[in-house]
Image (cartoon, rainbow, N blue to C red; front, side, top):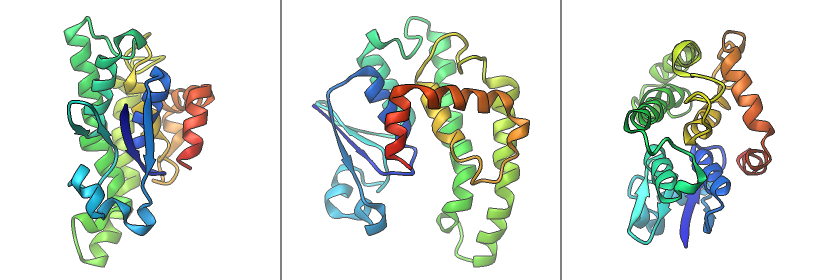
Length: 205
């Protein structure tokens, strides 16, 4: 059985939704970030990065959201959560998820994890002030080109939708002007209404 490590208010939500949507047998293990459980010796033995999500499989341990989402889509192809028979479309999906991971999530982290980059309090505050712009710019690119609609990949619902939904949940806190993102917000609203998404999302609040 898969073992899935997560924490509330994190991007692990995307993979958690995928696990439930697929119906895969798994054990969910919550980490208490308030008590630095992600820095415990036991967890660092699983994921030396000290972050979530992490997925323990029969073949080994996987980390990083794009990797976990692709793994699940490929391991359970019957769920139809990725265009596995189209190598170009699959690469496009990976490009979208990689953008969320390497650019959009990092822009968000400048508001809540500024100490990762600098120690100067004034520099941290300056980074926080920039987030509404940087996150707004990132999401405008998704709104006006990358989101094919009605789902990320067009007509097929995929793991990329779960990842976009997760990050779109941070927009209000990041001070982004939602009126400029009608398609992203419509996507988020439809996702939130899904019974599986609603059930798992409640765990992360």
